[in-house]
Image (cartoon, rainbow, N blue to C red; front, side, top):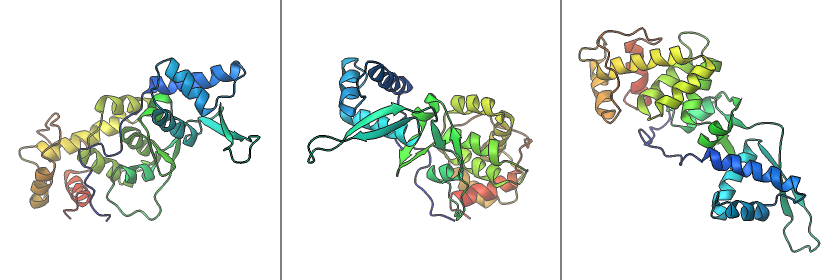
Length: 259
């Protein structure tokens, strides 16, 4: 087990970027190239400031970093005449990407409390909204929490006892997420039913007044730890979840460092 994170219920990985700004940056690269200008950092900044899209160089750098790391943009250096001057960086659009890391490595990034010496990686193609919600850290672009849940279930959920079900269940139980976006992405990838069933099982464990589980002590501690979690529909009967209530209690307890 990895040491328990302190990220439960918080967004410790920064704010979402604005997809409108990201799209405007890409359009600015196209426009400058079409006008015969090299889309350098300074020319992009001047153009975007004039459009009131971006107000400072730090914001532009953050957007360019994630666009480059995802493969959406490429950059090359043009040598200068004076050797003591840094080469000019010229940006261009690629015909590829954007790609994000959406496998188990993304789940670990968002706080999965498991030791995975061979965590599965998944380079998933996304859209501008998915990239705007992604997180850039240590040179890697991680998909949003919601996209990571969806992609792991879509690609790795090959049987009832798959670790994808377990990992996604414990994170859905212990992390905050944007439900509407999660479900929209789940519809696109065909895993909405699986996620609904997982959430129903979690609701039963967390909220049922008389849950049928063996380890009541661990369940009580789980409920105490997750008292902040939003209350959704409370299941009165055992739901048809892909994981049993006892399995959920055991795995959520491990995620929280209780067991």
